[in-house]
Amino acid sequence: MTPELKKARENMDPGIITAEGFLGSDSRSLSTIIDEDAQLLRNFELEPADLAERFRHFMEEGRKGLGEPVTVDSDWLVKTDEARGHLACPWEDGIFRKINVTVERKDNGEKIFFTDLSIHLLEAHGFLEGHGSSFRLEPELINKLLK
Image (tube, rainbow, N blue to C red; front, side):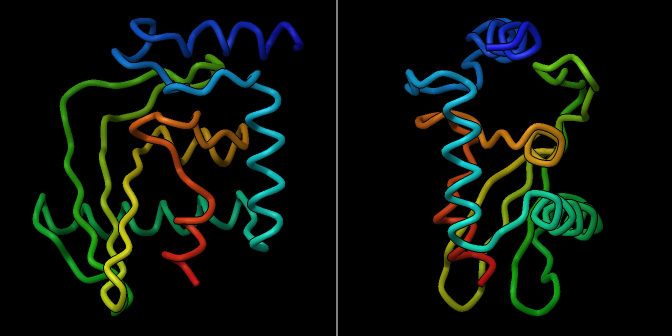
């Protein structure tokens, strides 16, 4: 791994930035996690930049509900919760507000949960978090939710 990836990986351990860390039960290397998730996204014809833009749209529209669920683009129910404080990116390239977003597709009930930091990790680093992480963005679930 590059020195940058090695430092980011160290920052992902439980208790460094978040209590549970970013990797869950995933024992794969950080580069393998990123590469394998990138391939899964390609298989579903999903682009990280487009997903980040879509998730950011959900977050901004959901924030208008002030903690209550709102309908976004007629197909999704979105709820945001904001907590005081900020979280640092493990790559040490930004600080992000603690905004939690739940998006539910109204026709099939599929739900996804992400944060402001999740959007950054996806867009800037192609990182969806490790298997077993509470904040992992599963490519299969993203596909079901958005298609």
